[in-house]
Length: 397
Image 1 (tube, rainbow, N blue to C red):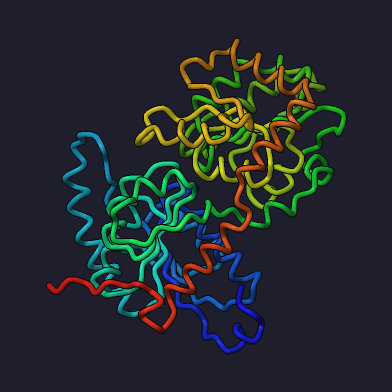
Image 2: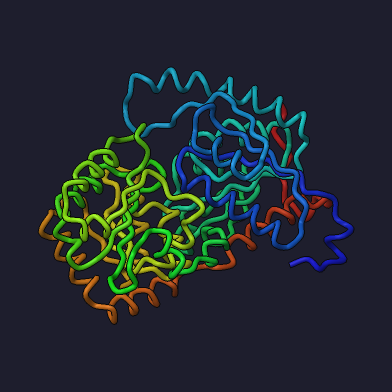
């Protein structure tokens, strides 16, 4: 990490962030910005993303200027919308080039997702240094495209690095950055915010930023019976994605008071997330890259039900990183019946020693310095000495 004297003489880093579409592509950028702030590195950041993606809201909440461009979803399957979306990508590249000419960034940081591709390709044409980061255990389609022009590929796992063998980019294993602020949570404060008792274990259920209706419905079949032995915070996702929060709240109203008090259903978990994690004894969720990274970072035992059909079965591969070492229980959605899921949750919630052992195993694969590693790579790539960047000249048009 640079010394205070080095930081005092360093101008602000002009950073363009490209990425979004899901929380897994948004949170790494926020974690790196947090790492820069913690070390006193001034950053002039600009986020470039889609017109209606959740990255827009994330940038606003972080106080980062946002520039929307045209984007097109990249699909691995036949779709009538593929041609339409493909036609939007050249427009997005042209818009991104205009943004980059105005900002003249020192480095472009891609966190992936199809929304990152136009900006990365525009950065290549403008000869701006590019670092692209892959959060999952595989190389996603957007990453494979970005990798063709990136200077540095940062991956989250050692095994993923081998998938990029032979690429033009320098490959580094940084881990998947998680906001350090997640470690500031307090379990007592978390229970108090939820109105929960310290005498019963707490289950935190999350389907990610957009929720997961199959998970919500599956858990719903276990309610209110499961509440005889635990307390549950249930994050369902927004009403724009599913109607589960309203439906579950309506059901809750008919339960006995002592069971109603053990259940909280919300669409979102925001600033209270550190306290929620601190209070949770067990997590039930998908196996997105961000969720897996947070569980490892914090050392939280989990039951993971990967999203079926995700590209390259990436969520199953992510989940296995924890399940294979005993840090999580991995269930596929088809086999996670009411009976099977209920049995797993009751067994775990009733066994504090097993939960503690799972927590330690999950923590063993976390990379707590991932955000700082990425910050260091971005600073090195933005260095004024071209030799320190390994940048390859852009092809002539």
